[in-house]
Length: 410
Image (cartoon, rainbow, N blue to C red; front, side):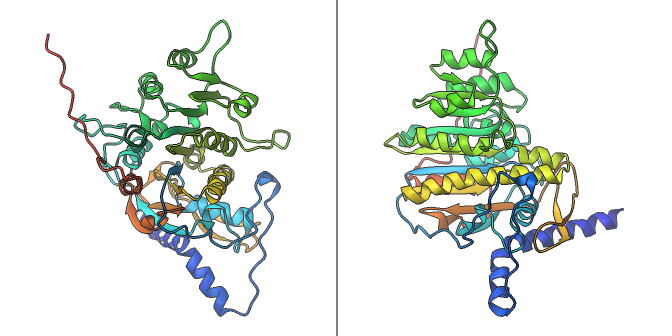
């Protein structure tokens, strides 16, 4: 058994490396070969909502211009395997996802202070603050000291508008890592209270407002903090002012209700936040890629990754028009160790294998587009991501640790 596990581990590392270098390898082979490239397959009915880009060329290099806005998109559990599988199944071997068109690529190491395999809480804390912490901890170091997050620094130092748009509940581990500070990710009521007290301008995620006679605690707390609370897609489309919190019932799209929810949430968050003259910081999470990985559900993993890719499309299309927006795509960790073992070039058949139903210690992709994107080229640790963002925003006092608060004497 130990030999089989070792061999599987080596195979996953090898396939991950191939996925990272895929753009270079495919380019080199097409230049050297006289055979025509395989035709990209149309997405099967299960992925009816997704149309891969017809232009496979990279988005333009924006150089080192001023960064006014930052959109950080995190695919929870999105290692190289889910990206490759979604690409093959939706667009064929020669196809591209929207994230594949981002001109700067690299990968990110994800270990936590607890060990080689991180959870979402420690992963989000690293991506938000530039510091490692123990698994399960949110926004604080193992010794209990609070760390400043890049969202908080953007708001407090640069006076930027801020937003979180996620498929999960707003008090889940990844959004919590950007706007809360607690010793345990399971402290959901406290996390929610801290996030709304942190006055994030746009909060969109799963949740319930309750009923007219019995409003939910979340709805009541948000209103007390001055938020407009919305709960339906129509209300989301109609809202024009911040602060706003969406406690939305989020489901997968159907042919009768075709617009992917995360892409729509991303577009609305950008629409609202861009009104701030000082710029904005927005974190978007494809939360449910992780859930598919935990279930070793290949079909769900592909669907969730493609839905996330459409949110990336919304971010990049805005950045292309704006010229001063940095778009970053990465993951907090890999879930499942998904790898591709074979299949057809048109993507109609893709053979895969899963290594675990938990997280793995594999590195994860990093994509960048916009001014300053070149800074993210190559190999980085997850703690490098917010530090580089702070440099591009000219935030000097980052990363930052606050002194531990001592209990008041009686």
